[in-house]
Length: 185
Image (cartoon, rainbow, N blue to C red):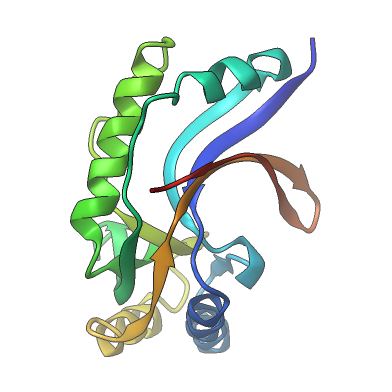
């Protein structure tokens, strides 16, 4: 049975992608051991579904029928790390304006997908993943970059849809394909 590696995402503007990609380039120049996300792959992950049977994609999409969301303005602001500064695994750009709306979309999505048997998120923190830290090499340089961008505004974008994406893993990194688009009101 064919399966797809799938997740839900909110798209960001090309300008926002470019500015966040510039931050990724700064990290790469620092010598920190970080696998930076390619500019075209930057987004707000709303829910990672993992491997799902391809035959269930329509059922998943149907599970969102009746989910109403109004368009909203999203601001990418500040840089930080998960789980914390001592043990950095993921470097991110946060969400300023629009964080409440993003969290509300995540709550509605969790509820809709919960009815289809997907587990609820333990804790949702709206963010855009910039890179994954592979080792502590040049950690201080990375922390310095995070500090220097703690209040940086990377742009704003009108969020007008939720996208179910397929992630195909390749040697050069993941390739994302839109499976279904859910327009907002």
